[in-house]
Each structure stands twice: as C-alpha cells, then as structure tokens.
Image (tube, rainbow, N blue to C red):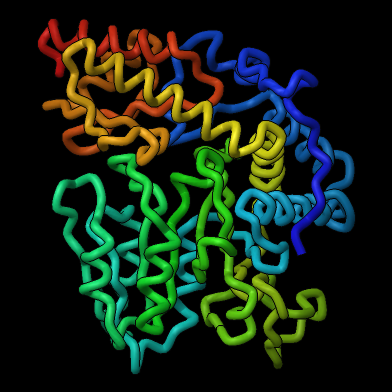
Length: 396
C-alpha cells in the first residue's frame, strides 16, 4: 500500500511561490548555482534535520536508535515510495547506488541467461557492476549511441534475446539530459523474458514517475541530486511480485527477517524489499534525505516538471540567441534538467565561471547547465552571458 502523506501545498492560491522556496537555499545569497544534476543545493530544512540528528546523538547516544532514529528510517522509506508511486514494502535503503546494484546483481545465477544488455551512455558505476563479473559467466552486450544523446529503442529490440537476464537503462542520460521511455524499455525486456532495471538517479524528483505504470522490475535512485538530500542515501525499488522469488547473497543484517534476533546459524530473508539491504545505515544521511524529499513532495513533482520545462526552454533559447550551440532534441519535452554545450576545454570554463560565482559542471567535451525549481530565468542569462565573455577571452 502507498503511504498516506499530509503535505501542505506551496501556498493557498494554488500557484507555487518559487521565490519563497528559493529563500530556503542560502547558496543563492553568494552564488549562481546551476549544477543540481551533480548535487542538489542545501536547503535550510535539510540543515535543520541534520542538526536534529546531532542533537539526538548528543542527548541520547545509542538510545536514539530505539525511537527517533528508527522512525526516521521508516519515514524515509515512505517518502521514497511516495515519490515513485511504489509501496513501502517495495523499497530498500542503501548508502549508494553501487550498493543497491550490487545487491540486485547478486540475485541472479546467470547460467541459462548470462547476458546483460546496456548502453555506452550509462553512468560508469552501472556498467562496472556487470562488466566485472565475467568470472561469474556474465556476458555484457553494450549498445552504441549513434548520436551521443540517446539510444534508439530498436537497438534494444535487436539485442535482447532469450539469453538475456537483464536490460539496464537510464531514465535520464547523465551526459545529455535526454529522457528514455522506460515503459517501452520494460516492454522490450519482458517480451523476451528478461528483467528491466532502471537507473533513475538523474530523473526522480524532476520527472513524474510511477513504477507500477511503467512496469519496470527494479529502479535505483538517490538523494544526491534532484531529491535535495545530499550524499549518503540511495534506494532500490523491487516489483512486489518478484521479491519472494529473488534471494540476493550480497546482503547484511538489515536483510534478515528478524535482524534483532542476531541468529548467526540461520539466515531468513525479510519478506519485503528489505531482503536486499546491507548493514547499518548512515542516520545523518537519512535525516538529510528525508528532509529533502519533504520539499520535493510538498511542491509536487508535476509542478517541478512544469517549472523545469519552462526554465530549460528559456535557457536553450537564450543559448541559441547568443550563438552558442546547445545539444538538445527537437522537442524540449524530451529533455530533463540538463543542457550541455560543447567546449574545447570544459574544465577551464567551469573553473573560470566559479571565479565569477557561477557553479556548473563538466563532462568530457561538454559543460553541463542544470537549472531546478529554485533557479530564476535571470540565473540562466547570467550563466550564458559569462560563457560568451569567456569565449571572447579565448576560454572555451
């Protein structure tokens, strides 16, 4: 069952007060922050939640586990489930995407179905998870993007066959910002009897997502970026009807059905997605992640997406008007909150912009501009004007 949440709307008028939300992010007092695709800006709510954690640690020591800290884990599970349309029983918590992927990869034998199909646009962690398992019989089929922006669904249709165990894809590609149709990808996998795992680190928070409607089997995401929770937390969705069929072996004591029984002679899997979990979580990161998710759920992902499309459209139009060449699709709606611009020396551009109080990021051959709901259109203008100035100075 999905948890019932009682989150107030942004304001009583039915219109979101974006300026008020912006005041919750102190970084804008001193900088133009345009890099949410790498790290969400710190909100005052997240800072207050982390202060609450340290206060409880100081006041109660280990006794905090028996009430507030354990309850915080429950709240985080509920919020993670709510933002993807899942049930709480379908969510497992992790310190990183790597840990979540490791648990999933350990749930398969790979004998009759040794193939894992993925693309060369995936984040390296996702690729390494399976490319390092050749000794276990895993065969990786890597698809090549024809335009370095996306991977056609037809490429997956040709590659997935009866020997495929898993199809792995990104909801939003981390270098291009392009959105992939995850429901279509799940359909391709299921038509051949394979599972579908989605890396949604760059999408959850900025794109409305319902895992049940999409039909995916696994989905991983985390608090670092669009969920505003900082580093140290990630989560895994496992489709409910798969849970009792899978027995991951890279797990920890939180995966036990009775973890506080401390039975070292017999391991009994938890009945829900917790069977994929590892060891003791970082409680400080849990507090931060829950507080960040509260902001996202309070605003509403539909409203965030509408805001995102408007900000990205203004940014793309402004870049073109200034003679820059953003890598974008024909429809802005096919792009998430990442706009990339080719540069000869992207790291030099990032460094020069930082000296001007503008924070962006780079990838090989590209700079990444990443607005979110707390940005204003004039932030984009300032960033683009500075890029043009650097271009004239020979830094490009």
